[in-house]
Image 1 (tube, rainbow over the protein chains, first blue to last red):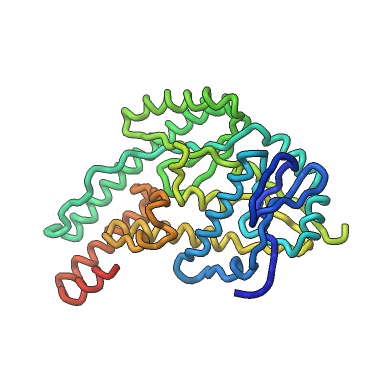
Image 2 (cartoon, chains in turn cyan, blue):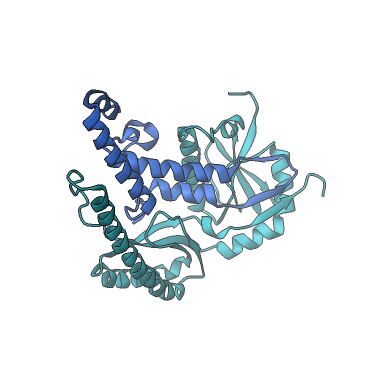
Length: 241
Length: 108
């Protein structure tokens, strides 16, 4: 790759009891700090957006998540957008100065919370390894259409179940946001839950999960996550304020 | 549940979320919209490949058994349709030119 150097910025966090091992370091300013690692910017620029899926992209994304979680173990974090590369330490300090009040305020809000994802999945359809041979084209298409209609009905049931569950979980969460990935039967909700409310939150899920299982609907829970879904923020930083 | 977060879940959060820095302090940011789209396409094609018995990524170090399997919902209509149509085509072609098609399909 190239000889250029940049600082990949992962999260903004509160200055304090962080112990970071190389290649990570904290660039601090008053009560906040930026967690960075030296990187060759070409690694990000070279991600091929036209060709087949890039292994380098996955490695960089996993690193981003791993670093975020590492810091999150010790302090509240504002995860930065993947691929945020700063020119140098001066740029990092400029950013921290410019964003200081906003960043501190968000960190205080997020402190003591973790993100959880909840989505509903339909049971896998019955074995679809039907005989394709011997079917006329029309029979094949009719059978497929019936199957899709059944799937649609099941999705409507799942949507109603999502609403029920969501209503109950909101009572135990500080914030929530819908995340639809299109991959699953229902939308996923992300919940920002105070750590001391987690037992109640999870009990609620377990209770409803039991009821839904009878109808072939499973509740999937992911997490705990750093608050990725709750930092929909822009921070402005100009070189000459 | 902790530890079972799939690769897809991680990618969707990391690539789709996060604080955005605006300004001219020498920030460069990868074009994330394009990346997010590419990841979704990759996941869809991975599902199709697996169902056809071509899990080409299981030997790839980035998708090794250390990484949880990508979970995909079989009721995704487009993915199902893709798989079914490809299966049908494969069968019809196999009937026409058995030798060549069999070699093509068994490639890792």
